[in-house]
Length: 142
Image 1 (cartoon, rainbow, N blue to C red):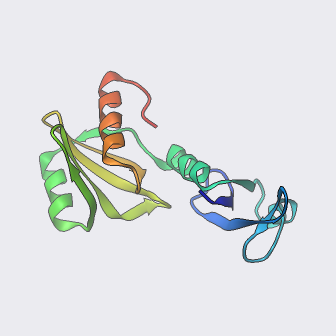
Image 2 (cartoon, rainbow, N blue to C red; image 1 turned 90 degrees about the vertical axis):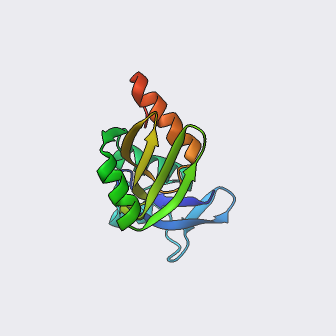
Image 3 (cartoon, rainbow, N blue to C red; image 1 turned 45 degrees about the horizontal axis):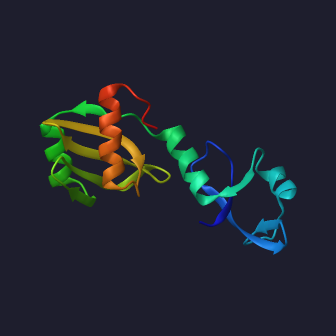
């Protein structure tokens, strides 16, 4: 994944990073190095894009909670849906519009019950199933 400049806890990347010399990184658009960037963005860090997304989900994501069949059916039939997936144990889909940054509402029908939570828009179906399983056992899911 790409390197990015961002402020942990915020919902957007400040800019992608480009290596201007071995181990020296600057913003792609304005060629600002981290100390310069921190003047206008206190707390800014250089990290990889995956770290930014994980930080975003840790800040804005939620644990799976039970919802109703009516809410699940309404979301599936009336809202813009993206990435429907199904296997022997679970159906899941994500809403196309993100609620915060790259975090979207996810719905699932698993183990005879309906679930919803906020998670990354690119979360694979198998990870959704794992989160549902962890939530039932009380394990940490985010």
